[in-house]
Length: 114
Image (tube, rainbow, N blue to C red; front, side, top):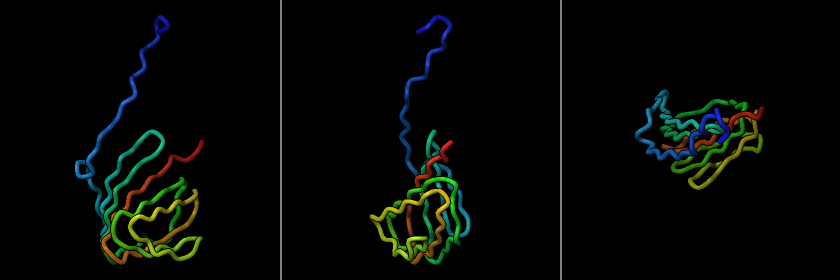
């Protein structure tokens, strides 16, 4: 190390249990978030009968369907979402969804470039 330089913190790992993170609940949706330096991760539980109106995000997004079923509408057309499916949205790609069953999603939101 150069004299007078401050030591860098060593890389770290975080081990998280979703239930230990605070929940934000509104209108049939429970979200638990884990922010990172280049992305954020969300665990989302959605009650059957809930709708997500058409919207988009300024960032790239991946959505992993863990349980349940939803009807997604996006530029690619209608999609019947089931467990094991993964959806990727470009920044600005619109989408909406109607949740047919209680559904659990994992959402990965990448920080916008720049």
